[in-house]
Length: 357
Ligand code: SF4
Image 1 (cartoon, rainbow, N blue to C red):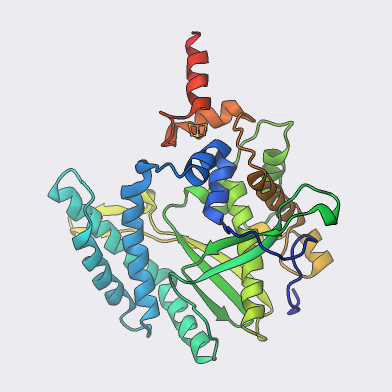
Image 2 (cartoon, protein in one colour):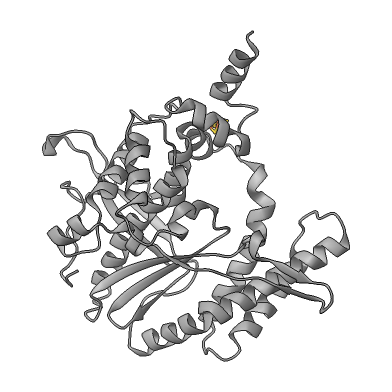
């Protein structure tokens, strides 16, 4: 990768649509375009996600505050203190005081596991980055990277509309040697799919991605595809961050996600009255970049993924919300966890058809 300023993605001018698109909404669209319509276009609230999300936000906010506050020493204690204050205000309706106490201990164990696994290292690198004179927000609510993508199927450049601003929030970013690293906490490892285990694009990841986007197969890998689209957006967004802040020492950019809640990792030792868990960060950069594009551009890019991201944004901008492609897979795998089943015409129609009425 070179340290040259990033060229605009696509060939469109960077005049901007007024409304930015959030990367989480792109994920929703990849899972189900109709769900995107309900959630984003129509603004229908999905209440099914609220309690779990609130728990995640309590831990994430505590970790960010502890990292922002400064020195590596006391990172875990600062995070637990902030988390305790948030938990005391947490109104999730749990079965019993015992369950509430257990959940709290699991979340505190998560904070400890994070601090031990990468938190201390990342906090130190963040302090070093600040000491190196890097300005701008590096932690928390206002830290978001963005990329501009031409969302149009028009082949004539003159016909193309303004580019979409695609935004991704990050929890923190730091410079490690000559690399700008962006980090985002996510609730669970599930959206990472096989990206947790496959360190390179070539092979199973490439095959899964290609088959998902190929209309002639019925393979359906929305989590894997959405995560790769997010990686594409973030790495380009980090390059833009680097250029805006004149980070001349930065040559490459990387994106890491840290799942906070992995129920399979939690162990309860009743004899020692101890709850432990583990936190396993996943660097998505090598799963995303392909060596052919890298050879052509000398940047961490993947032309196949980048093109599909542009296609998805074009579909969003064009208002294409029909969810019926790969309907059997979508109905079996996406609808069961969807909060819109009671109002979704596609789902209801499918159920009626199933009943043979
Ligand atoms: S019920 Fe199924 S088809 Fe309808 S919005 Fe939800 S996921 Fe999409």
